[in-house]
Length: 403
Image (tube, rainbow, N blue to C red; front, side):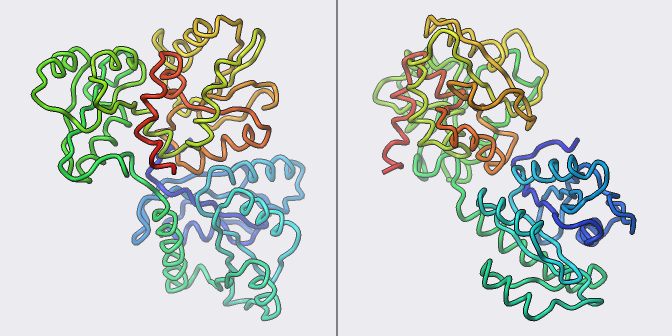
């Protein structure tokens, strides 16, 4: 299984059997990564490949089964193909021989539902050029030209890459940084980073690394401290930082040692704004106080790390929630991008981790079922802040940015 990487662009290749999906991946990468065959159904399960494409950068290409697969396992394969839509940032839909009908329209309907940008390709155009009337029809339907392409023509492949770069740049223009709007050049940010059982030996965890990089990119100053050092640091009153960011597990202690005139938040709260549905999190978090005996809470853990006795999602949050609410609450935990084992309607609250190892598109699609069912959503850090009575302080730095 391809390791998830939130800094890569996920590109899904969709189309009918023998439309040229595998050939396109081989042409994009310049390698024979995908099996090419005239036998329908050669591509079964979605296949992911992480690769660098010159001009486009780091991407994950996903080859999917044909959307018109009529084989014995065709229905299952098509279902898996549709599940992949929730993971992609950009979709490529391939047609050839001027075949465009319900399978393609259904796919594009799903792309639009998830606000996933897509490019339509008429493949093997050197053999069968795109029909002019079909071209006009598709433009009127989707307000974009169909790209005519042959995987044997390097100029066509370069043109496709240019199109993908344009879409990627549009996606990138919508992104914010961890500290966008929070700090300016020259500001000092203190990062409180406990070294516990879950911290990788010799390294910082990904949100901490990303925070340091974003601070540097904004020409600000990062001071990194362990929790015991932080207490002495603030007692000295030598430096007054603009913002303090703490690991959410020590929110309560950080609230006690950081002076009230200094803004305080958590790494997971930063991620909540960067990748999650922050406004929905703000509405959903206080619903913790409304949980009742017998309610079921869903914990969505994007990482697939080995569980420990100090595990934040599997151990600490369930323990703290039961203690805070004084209710007998049931918990389910789903890791990675695995499917839910129960209907989403069974849950009274959904708590998503920070999502540092998945893309925003994957995280937002993951939460969509809960939003559609009007089930409150929040994230790990905001949940912990709420239970430790630090919630208002933790979200305060962001409130002005929502207006």
